[in-house]
Length: 637
Image (cartoon, rainbow, N blue to C red):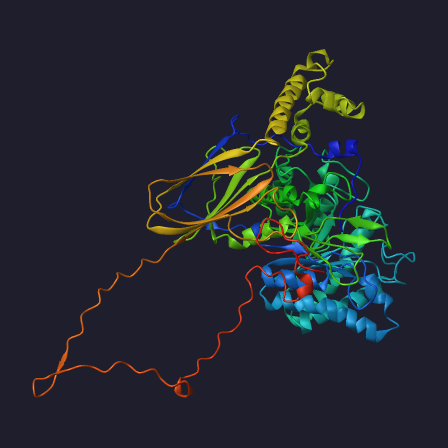
């Protein structure tokens, strides 16, 4: 479940990272050079389409998980993207146990869970099953957020479910223990109580593995930030984090820890590259912890929830301006890959509009209108990012594709022997200068850090960044003044490029033969129910190098696909027909071919109907209610 935003000052204290290498150009032009002969590495797993399938938040019946996206949305994803990848499913133990007195309803609810798990497994995908919600009657209080008091009953309950899914049905499932346990909205207990909860499930896993002779992956803790703990913590003391304690705890009690997970909501695409006080990224630090406590250093690290988030539950950038989120998504994924994160789950598949519990968040890939009894909704721009990801080739150029890469425009380059697919994005962080300061604060002296926090509390930081307050008048060190001046320059650039299109000069070297060129795009021309059709199509011949000039609007994403064309066979010149000569030497004229009578014509079977490539779903109710930026007409209600 998504984390609730902390205060701005607390957030400032948690984002202490140094500035990433900046190679930005101060002009509107960016050069991107690609060598078609470059060596590749396998495409990073973070680029494989994956999502938390949560959504909606409330159904009038109990036969479907309350936090699962609508059936129409699930069908749309299945038909357009498919289930081959990693997907996260919230498994609410409280919700299941509440139906214990109505076995028929409980069986239908479990069948709904199992249906999606089976679909993903059958497609070759994997489910991260997030276990949360203490079953009714097993907690220390009558609340699904409390830790279990009857450990024996809890273990028996969870063992039955894991045995069915993993040992009997043999579905491809990894189990994540809880979600955001550091937040009172999801767990009301101490850090040690969470560790005992994890141990109870881990002991069940070990027993089932011994019985079935199969591996059942288990991990956690799914905290709201990688450095958080149940007692509260900041990035300054990461060794007090729940992740650190969990790794140490599992080593002490010889418990399985097959992956480590956490959440990360932000507008900063570089958030995963934040530098700790140990002068290394969080990913590198966690891998060091794993190695120190005798776990495999390559244990998967998973950002199990993330999205564009600036603090509010409902954001224009996640709905009517969802192209902003789309460009953020492309930028964030590249940085996740570069820092070494193994898997990620965008949260969530559908918006949450649960009036019953007061949860309203437009975080979904799909939107919907709750005022209608029948389904009325459709995809946002971010859905087309998934289609772009699906178009990427299997080989990735490991180094940055940008010759002049910068904080706003960059590219992901993939290729095979005969094809090339490039995603180019233009994302401008609305808090670009502030996030630069947050990423630099670890390098400051405590007194300098305190002064910077004071600027925020006094609401003076914006005045400084906008040059309405003279830095030279500030009573602080020269080092901090230099940092603030740099932030001013970065703020100027961000303000400029939020409104300025960028010219991208794309150069492709060593391109041979003839290629079909297609260019797809996401930009401000469409935010909801957008068609995924080429903006441009043409055939290009080999030039060395091949050059293309693109205009990239702010908050936009482009996909360029090149497919090698098969050589056309040479045209055959028709040969004249020689007249036939009879034995008597007379020329015989061949009679004209007579048409076959209708009754004698062979009947050819009709070709099977082919669904439109970009249809959202076989169900007509899923067709978008409005189509922008395409030739699809507005559907009548």
